[in-house]
Length: 548
Image (cartoon, one colour):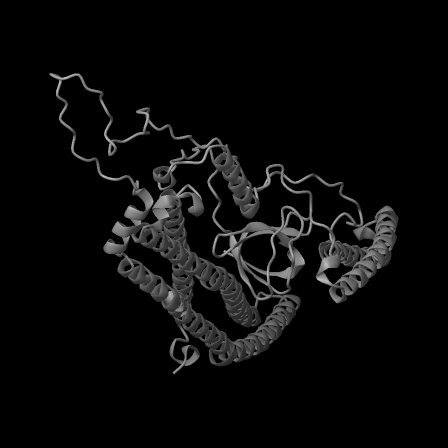
């Protein structure tokens, strides 16, 4: 069963139904868009919550991280952060696969529906015009018949009137004959018009409109099928992240099971045990006899009775954020200030833009030439000379763009050859890294060596007592630090890189890294190791980057 056969007379019904279908499609797109916004806001709030509760101090400076409770809590926060990332993926999938694609499809359906109904209305209008012409010819035939009958009666009356002249009788007969002839012509015209209208009406109801209705039916069924697929995408977006979310939940469970109360108690002992011997019994001091007061051997302090002074650490802590502002570079037209790979990309972009502009100018030139030909053939439409300045301007733009294209093609060839040569060379031949940040992080090994040497100097000058060796030295944490930023993406090293320069870090081929800052155009990207034990710059061309 099809619309063209069963609903041949329901033009308005089909118009309302197809409009309702498109409205439903738009309604679903709007629903998914708001759903994606909810997911995005939920993920953002989760990330803010994780950032709020993550430890502010670096792991190596935080004694609390040695407790399994703290380690489990940090692991749980990281799993929640990964869970938030999966919610962002759901929002992104819904926004692209449902909102964008279905919105575009809805516009296409609206245009197709409009075209079909315009075709149907034109067919209706043509049939109505035929009916009007038929009615006009019918009324003309009826009027001419009445006039002919009246003229015949007049001629017959004059012919029987003995007082009428012969001229009047002849004139009346001629008039009657003329009216009869006109009535016969109207009759023929009416019959032809009736035959033509019946043919057009049969074509309208049995061929033309059924075809249009069948097209509308096909369009509506395609829309319904696509909408059903869109409904399925809502669940598919969730099913795609279910495995990762399951891993996140499993990680939270593992973190919960990793809490070891006995081990935490032992860690607390190791962190804070003083090593002192317990005080002994106090001796009885007999003030009735003159005696020297001897301090208890088991009392706290030094043998001479003076309290032991513990030297506080004098090492100042600099801000731990290891990256300062990079030096500004002078931008050149051929982007030679950039590394070869970045230069090649920028030149490719410029070349594509110039080619698009050139194609646009050439299309405009062709359009102007056609318009000029039309003006020359039909002067009343416009003056061909008025187009000459625009044509000349377009030709000038084309010549300028061709020169720019040649220039960028030459620069691009040089950049590509440089990229190919660099890929064949050793990684050590890469261009030197940018100037290190103003506040470079202190090297952990050198810091420990320096502190060790200072401790050795102090010990050589004043050796501590046996009890003092076990005495922990408490240092105050510097509260003036900057909160580390969260990663903005992930990346994989596709080449080995030896970060020998200040401000860079080494990475091995295939190593997974966290993306901390995108390339600013200087060819370098800031990354952090997954273990959190290193952060610095590496060449952008050595990475395969995936943004969150």
